[in-house]
Image (cartoon, rainbow, N blue to C red):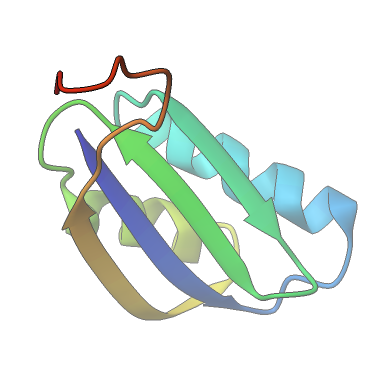
Length: 85
């Protein structure tokens, strides 16, 4: 899995967050997506390496500016038994 963090300029409220989330949902298959207008960030978790250009284009089509994109491998945190991975 991969976690993509995008810095978004122009989000001012919860409705802006919803617009960005909807744009991401239309651009790529995802496990989860969440946005914060207070932090100016959208976080996306995907199974496969995301097409960041397609996501960026979908977000910018709605009027928001993508300022930075970071993609990193992501491991879901959860219950593990001692001595096991």
